[in-house]
Amino acid sequence: MTLAMDGKAFITRYLDALSGHPKPAELVATFVSDPALVEHIAAVEAAFASYELVPEEMVAEGSVVAMRGTFRGRHTGTFAGISATGREVSAPLMIFYRIETGRIAQHWLQFDGASVVAQLQGEAAAV
Image 1 (cartoon, rainbow, N blue to C red):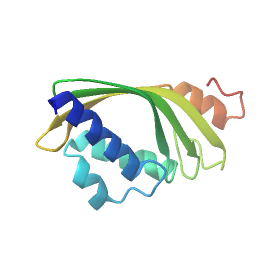
Image 2 (cartoon, one colour):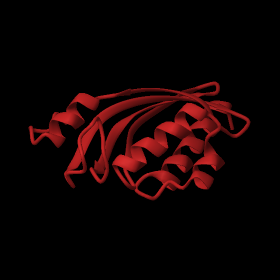
Image 3 (cartoon, helix red, strand yellow):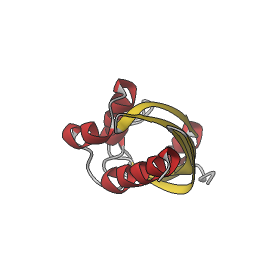
């Protein structure tokens, strides 16, 4: 199996374990060594408990896996200064993960946060 194929399988396991489920620090640590991603996951989990990332496409080369997908969650905590609304939201995203020694060592995220804010404010979803 190639490194890229292993990377896609790893990211699939990561998404299966965390997506739509609580994300305790111990579980996140089994998949992630990137401190910025650990912090990001905790912050998003606080605003959208048990949020999910739904992969639509994955491409891998070497130690990097790119995923295009959709973020989905129920607004249960403060996000972008907006108190919990209980609204269901979704938005497109792209994430690149660099895998090193069996964990995500680095990530790059492009996320339509403006769409999420609009949905929280009662405007139509962009997705």
